[in-house]
Image (cartoon, rainbow, N blue to C red; front, side):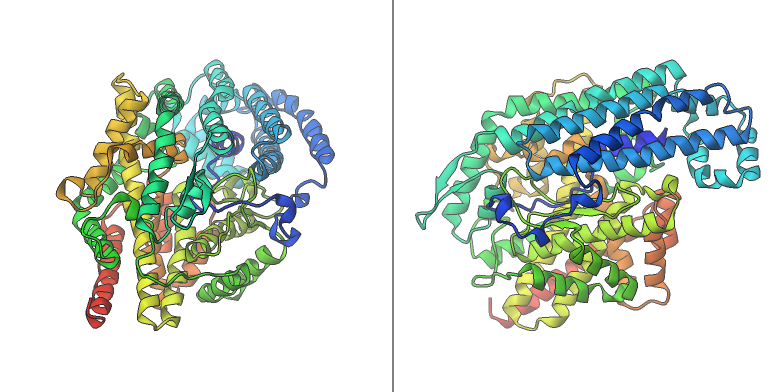
Length: 628
């Protein structure tokens, strides 16, 4: 059921709001100041305490079977069963989060990996024992369920879950079948787990010597850092050796991704959905048309994207824009760097429009060690917020490197964390867990306020150019790049539904066609060598079952909402905070409508394109002023 099994799928699927590709050269963890590491003792003081809590939770599992055959007999039994189930889910989230984050500190450590596997097995065991719950509820008349909710105040915490269960009745199975599906979760995480360990800890990444004589390791951290170096030849070296090594393992990577796609296909067919997309979106009642419209809108506006690429070419002063030019700084001599203290000050100032309480919670996050800030040897790459511990506080994993993009990433992850904080503070546990679809609104909203704050402070033309291009880079990365990923993901699932092969070569060919269309390769807008079309093998989000499109849809929603707050529209900030506090108490489309944006229309997307074009207009004015 959603209250427990939703927690399992979110945590085991590693969809902990991983957004940014933020990497750096690493240090040993012992060299990092304690204040810049997260405090997992807030969850459990020791691993022994974790083991004791795990053992205690297991003793609760068999209690759920006492309710078998009783749920339709009395509303008291239904309530007691749902409460037990959600209590177990709440403690499970705490146990798994501890093991998961302990493992993420150093992906080489087998002990923490074993802890994750233990708790995953526990989740499967309980889900198997509780598999009778939803079939038994669905065997009741809809009127009886609604009468129970009306007559029992305690069931108000579960009314959204129960009503959503009724909505999905056609796709729920018998108790025996649900039990089998619960057991298959033991296999479901394997593709991502193998990918994560291989790509983060065991893939033999190359070294390369740059033009300054420095030899660097081009692992994921090194690729992200050194693909942005000013020297163009160095950038091409980084791209060539990194993608060359990835390409060597493309068939292995293809087999891993094929396994993940076949998993999605299995669950879709088992539950009677027509397509994998329909299956993935139905969980949160997202119309399939929202996904399809996003791809259509982006493809219809590729001229705007190509305008951005032409500006980048102009600023770089190159005759031909190459794929390896996309991450380089476009304004020479301008490299905005921020210490963590400066990042903290800039973020707190930028988010003042959301009020004193919001800023106060941000200060808690910095002061009370919610954040693991710096890259260390073996640490999981990227950045995420984990809000899965209802009774404590959210946590943030960063790989902070001191660039403006890192400051923006930190603001982004803090947006997730405060979303979790407000939802957990306001909603009962069954309604606190908000859907991923709305999660990215809170995070990209913070990014929008940060860039607005920076542009209001900085008057120097070169610095403004750098920031304006950073803003465009964000739109490019979140709207166009993520939609490019979403289109690839859709086509890959469609291939699987047609029983077409998903080999490393087939995936590379498909990805190459899509990425070249987006970047105008055939029109000479941006040239993409064959070697780089293996990029799909580098993207962890393809293991998450139609996850990436939500970055783009959420971004367009956050642009619309941030404009309301920044223009001081009456009640806009209050509506946004109410949205954060709503958690998962309604369907995501409805939550956003209450906040003031309707994603079933093209209006949010059109506003984003307007903002993008206005930003490019300002850049062109500055360039004209400078005679460029």
